[in-house]
Length: 147
Image (tube, rainbow, N blue to C red; front, side, top):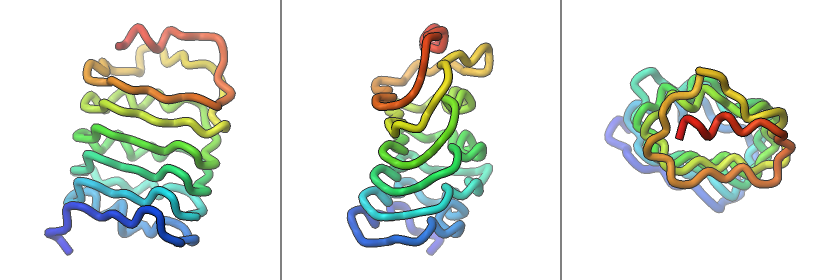
């Protein structure tokens, strides 16, 4: 399936974890939509260093754990929707290294802490939508100086 560019399996009844083979295919896939299922477990931390994903939608599942640290390997990523899951994490400052990001949806009720990212956040010059609603974030808005 090396020619596969778009995989849309949204709004089905998948209830297992995300197979690692899907994130390993990120060097050829441009679009991966798994929203609206009942996926469990963690998002695999296996996004390839040559990740070509532009659109990743994992919204409305039961995914837990943290945002994978290999996600910034997806340097062409424009839309990231991890909302409405069970991810428990601080604001993932390392996503600031994805300069192509336009839409970032992290609404989940489980993100916590401040938005302070010090100097680790890059220039998100293309960001148009940031949705952090329904979380447990607090006080420091210094992250927005990067925009």
